[in-house]
Length: 327
Ligand code: GZL
Image 1 (tube, protein in one colour):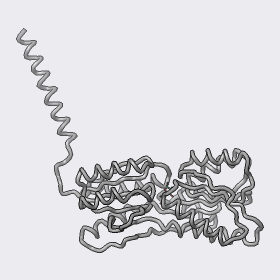
Image 2: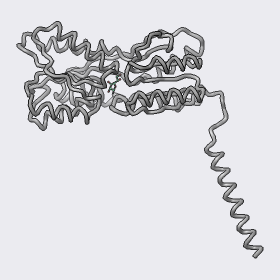
Image 3: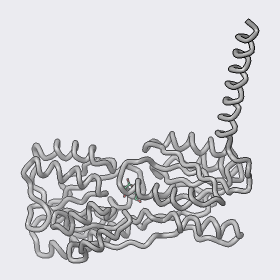
Image 4: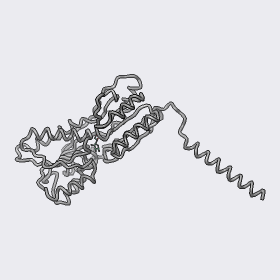
């Protein structure tokens, strides 16, 4: 009887000690010298976003001087607000935000400001009354991207009669959508023979673009140009064109313009399936780390920082260049 009692006691002691170990193992290092960054990322909606997340995590997660906490908003702004408010409660040292859309940030950014936590806005922008609510906005010149596309289309359609343009738009209210759309609409206003036959909402995803394109092509096939605001929507559109028997690319009915210049899009471009790839560089994790270092040294940082980008046609591409691309 006594032996049984002792063995039960021994088991209980072992279980308690194991539980204690697990707790120790899960316990965060108490080292509070690390600079803690809270990052609210848009989501995982596109190849561009996956590459951007990879650039950020590789830049910070492998550096022992930083504790990098990323939360994925799954393309919902309210999820970003919840993340930012959690970061405030956690007392992080800096908050990074890739905003889903421009509007709606004034209140939560004021809360961060009142908590004395610096903010860097990255990728897209925020529409706030006071740009002292963030240190800097680093990302692309989206209007410039659209102008590069319009300039190329202008050369390609010189002397043509009517040019029917189908416009696939990304997430409505995102800076990338607002400015790529503005560039096209400004160019259409300057070309009497350019007509936007339809603006379809593709939300920057392949699935949504395929869905809206399939529906549109049931009754409309008089398209000369597809102006698609990101590669993943373009891939969905190409699938819909194939199923509708509409040709595209070199020698095809539809000229395709796409934004991001991911590897897959560049491969299609070199193979003559896409006519113009406008680069949108997601790999700015290292630039953000440099900006944070400058801030921590008390150096002035510019309010807007633009990343370097270019455009590609098949003439600019070869397999070695594509294979060497990081995204
Ligand atoms: C651009 C970025 C856009 C990409 C899309 O900086 O905001 O969002 O062009 C992504 O692929 O979804």
